[in-house]
Image 1 (cartoon, one colour):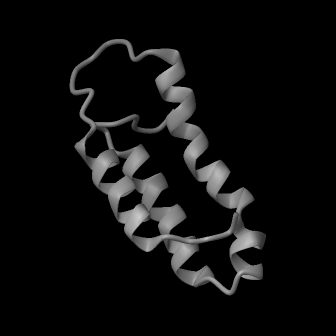
Image 2 (cartoon, one colour):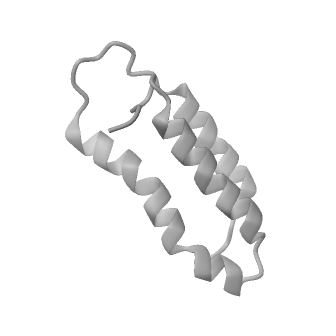
Length: 79
């Protein structure tokens, strides 16, 4: 819809930082796929955020923050 919710981003980041697969040797494939899709889905909304007059710079920063959280060794790390 293009409505950028900064509090929703904060909740998402809090949730991502709470994930800790620790020393798990396997992670359910579907969970990995869904987590990796978050930044992609966010990118698909860029134009809609721009059209609605949202803070595009903050939105881009949010995408980077989500990717950084996913790259955390406790979550998914680098593929």
